[in-house]
Image (cartoon, rainbow, N blue to C red; front, side):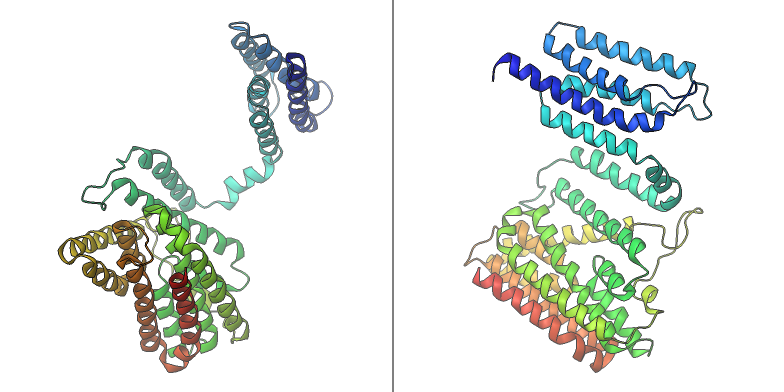
Length: 423
């Protein structure tokens, strides 16, 4: 492409970006003497000016243009006599100028930024309503904490194991962030959709914390006569869906090479458990009181919080991350002591307590091999964990509850194990 054709392309894209942003600002500008600063033409010209200064390649011209646009914004804000003198338009004009500058180096990035800025400006009312009325105080604090963990603590954590291939501080923090993010997503989904299919959604959300605990809680509801066995068995089976999804998350965080072995069997198991569990829920006897019962709320710890405000339990997630790390260390020690036999024994013992803790240790200890002990430990741990859930269901809910739950639990588990073995 010749220099003239490239310059024409850059200026055309810059004009389009400026017009896109300017149309949105023109609609909010108003009419008459009291109209707001900058509209369609101003934004289009500002973006074109940015592209032109970048194309000239004259030293200091881009900075001079940015200073000019910023000065115009300051003057406009100083002269604004409206009841709501915000600075959104002034800042958006400066960013529009910089988008024009960016067009000279990356048309795709500049166009994407222009679309994003326009969407942000157009969503003013919804964003304000979301921040002021929809979000709860506890959710805001949890969101800030999660952002600080991901954006500040995680990049600073050393990325090297402290003992063999386990106890990596970066991996531990990554697991903690994943647990908190999944709990937050489950909380927000339950808030948005809690009026429909409360048992199914509550089971899915609670399964991200502990599928075994969810199965036990729903079994107690059956034993106490507060709900039917089929409905609660469907919810218990749906709580197994997050078990397999979290398995993929743990594998991606600890050793991504395992994803090639796990993704297809895990997703097949998820599909079967989801379909079977939903069939049980749809045919079960609905009890409205069971929605909050299946996922009990913890006491709040802040005077501004209300029950259900918190998106996650930091203490609980930290305990799970510590358990993951502790079982990793235990399995590694057994492997050093007894070799591959120690790896299998450690994984089976860990699966009785927490499946993901045991398998994270397996993932950290060895890469997947078709004839390796790690693969055998993985399959045996899945079977042992299903047996642990079955015993829990029978003790908590009785034989009728177990009779509805066990077929779906064992079929989706054995299918997952078979696909892993065949893969």
